[in-house]
Image 1 (cartoon, rainbow, N blue to C red):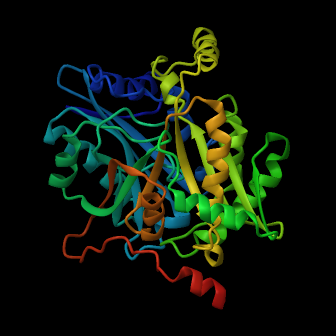
Image 2: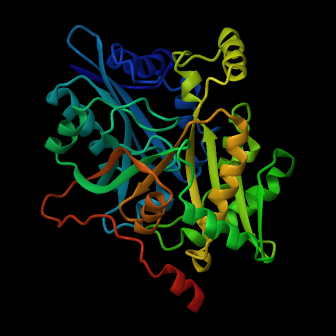
Length: 396
């Protein structure tokens, strides 16, 4: 076997094709768009290169057949905030063979160690954690857009190599036919009568304002998360622009208190229900196909990518108000049957409680692993977000 760095057009094509080989007979897998994968490793497209670097490799067997791939990366804004400087690895695909997988893992470890890293998380993304984050270990059904999907045997490959459970991510599904629980409606109606609260849906016409509002809420709501780093606004702009064809403005909601942004919910139609017919390619035929399939309302599932409430307004009924307005907007479309509430880590018990309260039912479990490079160091799991964040925010 031999491992080769991806550094030219041929190896870039090979890197993409490894996944097509691994999942050739898997009907659940949806091939991500090639351009989306390539953009992760393109410094002109990925703002994380401003304070980071990445490298990727392909693995060939003795007959020069593709059998694996992997990438390693460092986000220096976060790497040195842990007890052990920590890089990342991801985009791992491999045949069911320990020796092959270990070669790929070793290459990541070697590359990161040379850059003063002492641990690596994986499989993760060289970007925000809303896409391609965590190893699927339960719920092997068709993935939503941006969600990692992999064969069940990957779990054994990671754990036998020495990756340890860092945190768990749960995605729940909400059956829209059942509607919201009655108590949610009552709370939402009660909140709606309070003049200080306002609810607005996103519009592209005022995209800059909503991005600014998103940043305000995100930076306050996530400040108590481990290793918090403010989100990059350029990432938001690029995501909105690239997703414009699929986005429904009335499915993205913001909450305000006396015109100050205090919460949001971002729901994207699950474009994977169309992209599964593309085999990763964007061309004229597939663009025409996308228009036709969208017109036929092929997409009947949405994914709540992220939701946040400023701490001092948590448990004030604002969450119910947002879901209530979303329900009123989505039901008249007569298109969506299910929402995926993704993903919530076990470090965020309050959001997990909200998913349960709104009627979400378990769908998928991902695990983000960490591998320490020095064996005699005590391993520590991800910290839990304090349950008293509201009290802390009010007191501050």
